[in-house]
Length: 334
Image 1 (cartoon, helix red, strand yellow):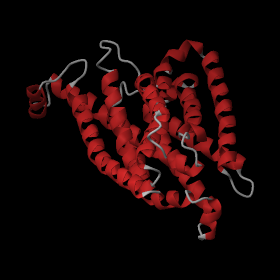
Image 2 (cartoon, rainbow, N blue to C red):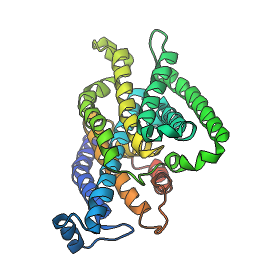
Image 3 (cartoon, helix red, strand yellow):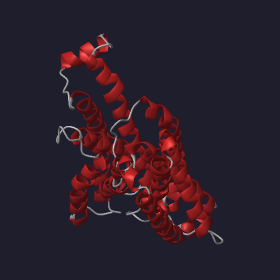
């Protein structure tokens, strides 16, 4: 790598270290002020001083928990994507590749459609479904080790199976399908403090563990053979990292629904700008994922007022063209 390339990447890293936190803070502030009932600064001050008023109820019971859930979900999905892309050595990997999305979607469908009496346990069902899918995929791909290719192939098969079972449940209980469609589209409508209380231990614990995943991820970038020559237990590292990614993505999916795109695009865009060094890629992805989801959620509930568009749809519509633009841009290389 030339000195010029290193210099450019260092400059980009410094810029992102400034821009991403500002983007996150700005998105959070915008999410507080804008909505079906826009706030002025005086409204916000009054809400803090008199918590019994309508503005206070909107702020503390609707917008703040929703913003927190959106930020946590975005951070977890982006961190999971960064980890999986490093483990699989595939820049287009994302949480769905290990069956998190499919397993969570199937379990949530069972809770909301087939067993509506357990609908209040949907986050727990989705979380458990994500982990069971990951364990199945890793078990199926194991044969004196589990290579990234085997894991991907097993993930494709489990995704297809879970998707077919989910479609079958929706057909059998067609009269209840409307209850699950918003969740399948991905979004944060109706999210409150219950969801914050449910998910924050997994989010905090998972993001804390990502700090210890940075060195193993950089080690895997050297290749399995080189890592083994250096004395690293490659299979144990790979399984631990995939399990961590499942924890992060499962936590996000359990409260955000099938919110795609974040785990794929955010780490990849950051990698295109600053390279694959996990010391920068992972923390920047966490902040960038949180900022992107909070920003798009604020747009989804204000731009199309009085209709609230599921944020998953808006994420795909806004992010896909930008992602394709980056891929076609020849002067940004890995």
